[in-house]
Image (tube, rainbow, N blue to C red; front, side, top):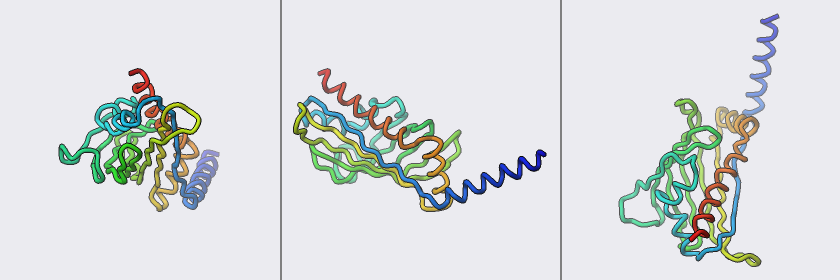
Length: 191
């Protein structure tokens, strides 16, 4: 009887992995808040990676600029961030580009996710942060689109499917981003 149960469990696991191998899933979420503060102050907060941005989320373990000191927030700025998303540790080696103060910037990173100290997957991540006018509300709309692309391999497809289906990585990414935006809003509107 135990052999039959093991054979069925193995068959189901192999079937799940084969199915997962054909379905690459991506994370792509956008969150936004309206901040009642001057646009330049919002810009200052969202570009203060080692200060306000780092403190914006308890999941941030380390955030540091790795570019040459004194270069400012410009295209090519490099940064390192260590954080947790959904209980999984991520180490981001990132850069900033398409910087248009005080309206928007984009970022991308090669991120290694690990669980219990074991590297499980490298993900290409990025984001698009914008500070835009609102037509009906007082203040500026601060939005942040974040995305993650798993490797297009059997392992990448299987992990993307597992993390999406069982760990709800999309909701975790949205919550993570929302926490950061709400923190910036609260900090600036308390001034």
